[in-house]
Amino acid sequence: MGEKTCCFTGHREIEKKNYVRIKESTKNAIVALIKRGVIYYGAGGARGYDTIAAETVLELKKSIRRLN
Image (tube, rainbow, N blue to C red; front, side):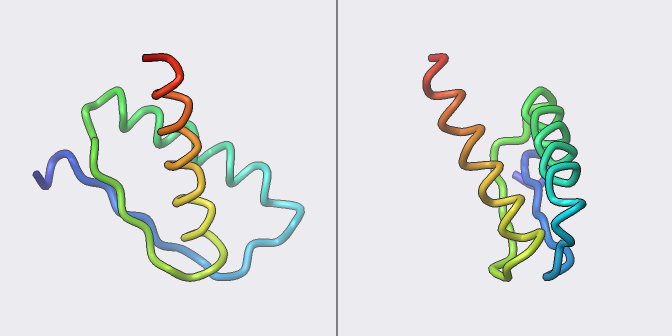
């Protein structure tokens, strides 16, 4: 299971000017992980990057469901 798992954690404070870039970079990283077979994702519970990562995983999950 370890090779199919990815966990995210990061800074609690994300500057507004960096939010879109970080969100897009996170999305691209998750898509690449999906293509490599990663199916389990975890994120810390703090605001900031943890939330960005968790929201992005959930958004991608919804998109993939619509395609199937």
